[in-house]
Length: 239
Image (cartoon, rainbow, N blue to C red; front, side, top):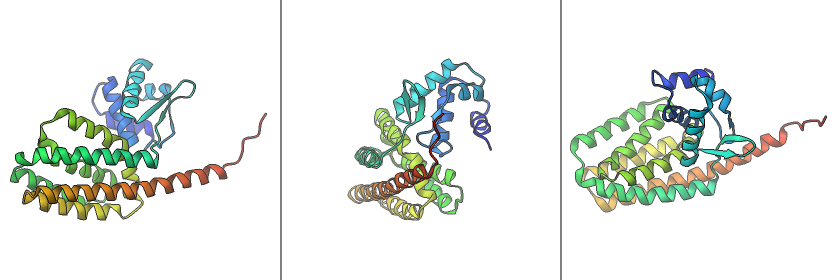
């Protein structure tokens, strides 16, 4: 399926507002349909949605504020890269915020909510689609701390997740991270059921730090592979 067709499918019946355009482009980036460093041409995007450049520019500004897009004075917009050191820092910040959010949410947990997490994990273990597994992974984490009733805190965590999710998807597709994450999720849920605050914080920290280590190693290898490919490309002859 072409990018244009995928964008149309993701938009569905929604009106092509700047928010909807940003949501579609965000999804394309997070799911790896558009790689880091690739251009986001306003003409092309405007054709996908049948709009002028104005809502496209607004959507790109929104994604720039989220850290997913970079705007260049001469080259226009490109998908923002994520360097290993930045990924590690983002995950360290997210860890601190997640532990706080989970501690605030814990008094409001219900058995029904924890059963919902159990259902998510069961589905994840049987899931073959990386896109779907990644969605479940995000929902599991969000559901853990959703009840904290701190909208600004949740927005900060969501913004950090948006910056690393596309790389975690790649990590899942090219390593055994998925199996490790599922084991750690099971341990987190077991601790959540007995409301063991100290154990839960330790498990969430371990899960986040393990993810950071694996992601950093993966990104370093990803960078090396990209440089190797670039070096193999033939040089363009000057006119």
